[in-house]
Length: 413
Ligand code: D9A
Image 1 (cartoon, protein in one colour):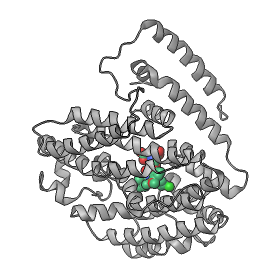
Image 2: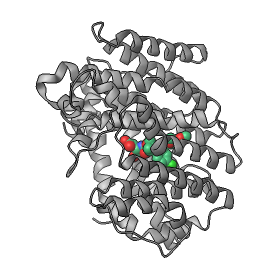
Image 3: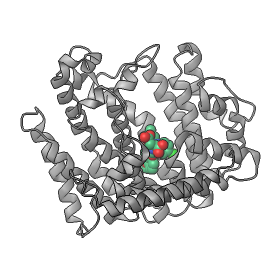
Image 4: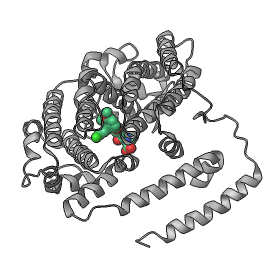
């Protein structure tokens, strides 16, 4: 469906989408003048799109630290991901990465596209890193060291048990949560969150990505990447890749629902973590990805499309989440809505139905007990969109004008 089609189907996506587009153009103009910072911020925009906008609104000092942290993590990921690097070359790079960030002469060429540029010009990231405050540097160094070691460990090890799964996710995402909590604390705006809750923030996001990206990871060339724990999938199929074949559709969806149920375990910790935040910009920075995650799980649950192609939230829904997430009441509201949606998708005959439903009940109880679920706009879309023709005509006109305007002002035109 084209852009106009999507907007006709979801007319209320229009305003937040425009707002996001304008915010993105504004952010692109805010690139700092120093070449190393300019490199870091334009790289951030290239590799993360909407997330970069949320980083952009953090207080300056913290924003710089988060930007560097994000790029260091991306660089580590790029090394871990590049299957063309032999293990005996890769492991020492991963385990010494905490030293490389202090060394403006260090670089290692790998990855493709934007990631290749990031790796080739890594000296810009090191130069910027060295300008951060000591406490920010130490937090980034500590996490880089632990993550590199964890990644090295999992290069030769498969994700067998649910314990391995939690351990792998701890290294690649839980530690990001711990690191960010330290950066927030170093900025003086927040109390230091517990490692346990910080870890849960990362696990919930990472497990959602692993579920959503099943097909992309299994089809990875030259070698498929497998993150779904054997302890879960072996109840349904003999080989992880069997889930993508049509004859196994029923088992595949049951296995998927099992994975979603496992991820839901972290929701209450995440709500607790977010409820303790004080600074509104840090709060938004944390809450937006979490709402996107529960929305993605709601979309993926019981959905065979996960094994056929890409299942992603509509861009308009993302824009809506970014627009509407201001305080904890919005988070409880969103988690409540998406839990409702999930509940309505649970099939009594699913082997994990009872477990799934009880986790969803628990989430809804937490949201209700917060006492702030008031009248608010719902994220759940009516199945029968009722559009009125005058509105469509109006929208079409406004849309054309705005798009013409925005395109005309594009610098490369
Ligand atoms: C995050 Cl500094 C991530 N990851 C994310 C993004 O959110 C977390 C990577 C680096 C950093 C932060 C994040 C945000 C706020 C608070 C957090 C936190 O903890 C307290 O991390 C736990 O996904 C990657 C990991 C999950 C591996 C940690 C959100 C993000 N969204 C993408 C959307 C997508 O589909 O990937 O990056 C985007 O907007 O481009």
